[in-house]
Image 1 (spheres, each protein chain N blue to C red):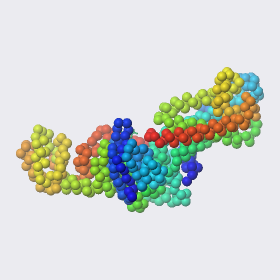
Image 2: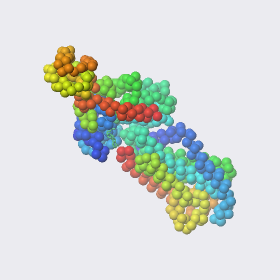
Image 3: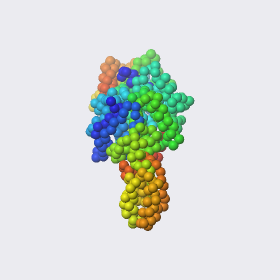
Image 4: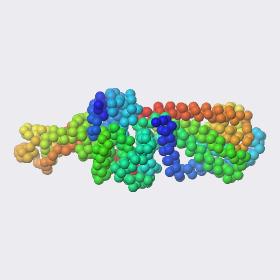
Length: 260
Length: 331
Ligand SMILES: Nc1ncnc2c1ncn2[C@@H]1O[C@H](COP(=O)(O)OP(=O)(O)OP(=O)(O)O)[C@@H](O)[C@H]1O
Ligand SMILES: [Mg+2]
């Protein structure tokens, strides 16, 4: 049978587990909800700053896409942690002694994580709408979610890779926290790139999060900033995702073949 | 063709030789067991045979395929039930089996039929739609075993299938294993450190200790090789002990003697004739016998005679480990 069928088997299992651990869903929403409500209002006074880069709306409308991406980043980059549990509690060995391929395990996990991340992100989008963020074109929700899923796939790749390599939770969380926060902060998620010092801005230009934020913000507000065309953003995200998925399958396969 | 064949199989972890030059074969349709204490190398051997660990040296064939060269072929032909229970707690019993069925590529139209059949066999049909969190340790183990045989593997590996379970549950699981074996006609390779389990289930047993196989034979042969009867003595500790043993060894009908301080085990062909002679010697040497008993040999005796220690030698340590296993089973 095919890689697709086998990946779906793992995907199905991960989603079942997610559905049945509902408490986690809400807990993971608290932080981004606080971001959007508290920080969105705290920095409401910075409107002149964002106006200076050509953004006419409320600050909260500027940062809402950023918080949606924040949710996607953290849900997906944390999402691989159960790989460690699977190795510790035998599910992994069960899968490894079955005829399915190692990469289908990684792919199944990644696709489940990215879907879950998108679900969480869509809840944040709901909160944003509820607190008054407007949406010029509601039809855009579908492509926005598609972008969020795609982008999260890349980050789930990072997560699965780190989880397969780390032998302990401590290592996993250490590496993930080391990666996650800077990737988020070094992007225009909360403030326009133009406000960053030159050198930081050029570092941010290497960050796939930057392109995702710009793209999603353009889709939500209709304002294009920083002179990055949408097509370029889509291309950068796609390349990032392809590399991460490929790398994650490779690293995962290599690592799970070693004893835990 | 053998179902399992190993040639000088070894596995080292650093300096530790967990599996040390093991060679054995298992016939198709046989129930073969590894009997050994904690840390003997049972799980390690099983993990090599199920393609999870690469041997340091030597060769292992399962269903005719080399585990190192053709792991994919091997995986298509085996079922593996791990020592720790591995069922997904969030999922229901049935969902766990669906997962297992898909992992093992059971054709779509056979999945439901196979699951119903297996659930019936392990008597979990009425709990199948409840989450596994609500299952007892024994039920989880049964579900785990069901998952291992759902796809009718040619070779089923059971790593300590009843560890940490009470004796009733253990018996029940033995029954299932026997039923599985006759109904699906598969080769079963199991490990255990329960004598009774090995005795009850296995056609042949390999006694393994410190990574080495000490002996392989059927339980019956092992026991009869020991002599027909076992005389167990407990004597008062004293100077004359060594002399006493020497004298006992001179008795014609005695095959073998093991002693562990005040405990002496004598394997003999005609116990009833040996006992008076023992009393004779003890009164000559002025050794006080506290208790004496005459029994048929058990696997316990066999084990002691090959390894020089009881299987539960580690005492407190062992109990602690059992407890940890138990906790993990129920967690
Ligand atoms: N991954 C590992 N790294 C280092 N040592 C290991 C590893 N796995 C097993 N060992 C060691 O190898 C030896 C054999 O272990 P194994 O798990 O095969 O024993 P076992 O016979 O299954 O024991 P038990 O009855 O406790 O399950 C032990 O000394 C154990 O500590
Ligand atoms: Mg073991």
